[in-house]
Image (cartoon, rainbow, N blue to C red; front, side, top):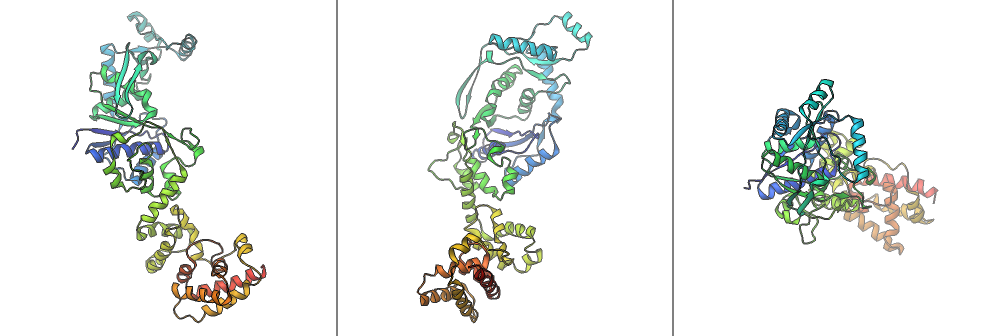
Length: 475
């Protein structure tokens, strides 16, 4: 077992996006592989933007992905006493100071600094008389951290040695005028209180790290290690956003992606296990994981690759498990009932098996409607391509030969079709394509002989006769 303690610290101010999910997965893989502890902290100090719905989305997403944590979640908002104590300590030690600038004054100071190409210089050295005067006026005050001279460095576990010139950092606010802590202060205090030794997060936090390291040092606390993974970019090379499609984990769940797919896919965005392999189970990912395999180059979110990977996981999934998800879709459509699932499970599971090799997402089981309903219309393009002037005569011959079959099995049906095609001097496809169209209304799907056995003799004969009447008239 390792002595390392990690934390995943989402903010409940929006949806649980794939970038957050990947950070959680990297932390989980590290903890599972190296035997470290992984804690969950909810950073909810932004009371105006934090919502219960956002928190539920985060917790539901983590549960769906199977990312587990040690103990109960820690809520940042409940650690206010420790945050205030740290601010008091920084004021007492001279590492922080009260600032009374008005919004108008701040705007003017920032404008001047920008024109002179430097950081804003705040008044760090108010006299006691000046401070008393501001207090007497009742001016709102914030607490700013005093940035020291020099540079801040750390050895990032992914990116190597990082150097940050402190002149690029302004004296930042650590406590608002209402007494609430600002992000950087709260994060540092909470990481210390939770005994966090390694902070693993995305590259968008790189600029936060020097500020937090300076706070740790000013408070005389041990500084944790840091590891900053890549950004996730869309296919256009820009940061992942809504324009690239679904961006929250729950949206991908609703679109029919499996949790094992998303876990596998996100784990490989910024980590290379080596060997060129791309399909992994969760257990295999844990076994293969290494901090050395995490990449510096930004990752591309490839939607087509995600669909392919989902298909691979769907095909590897036991049909009995996949059936439960298909049944829910069919019940929502009104095609089957709970009673059907109970009484016809074997038959319905077989239909799932017929589709398993052909679906990319669970939602593709929505295309199985023709197993439960007569076709209401027929694909015009397929009709034009495969239904010729002499097709009705051939179809009637096929119906006549299928009707007396005693065993309406896949092999028996195939034998009839191929035998008839041979007698007519045709390729079997000349009968197969029109038959599929008449039975399902579309030109694709499971093998037609498997389809016919699943539908049964009575249904097939009825649909073929109807198709002959409707399609034959329009040939």
